[in-house]
Length: 134
Image (tube, rainbow, N blue to C red; front, side, top):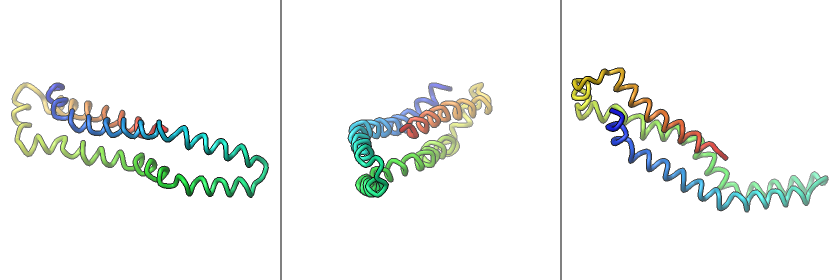
């Protein structure tokens, strides 16, 4: 049962974790430069409130698209996982009628449901946790 669930779930899982790996790569490349620019700017305006306000406004305007993209991804990732992982999780079985075959092969409904929820639930929690790391 676990093997079958993994076989059905491996392509969506690979797509999401591949996208998260690409995001991590982009953030690893751009993050140090943005962090260095911020640290340098804050260090130069120490004590001068007007200069700090100008720097922060300029910094946020320069990197607004990056901040919005990362924030949108973190906020939308659980909804996308629910949409593309959760909805097909059972409807595929019910539409094809394979749930009857599985339940007749000495697999109880509770076990079938527990395996489906267990594998996809752990993967969804892992993806959500990785997506929310900064």
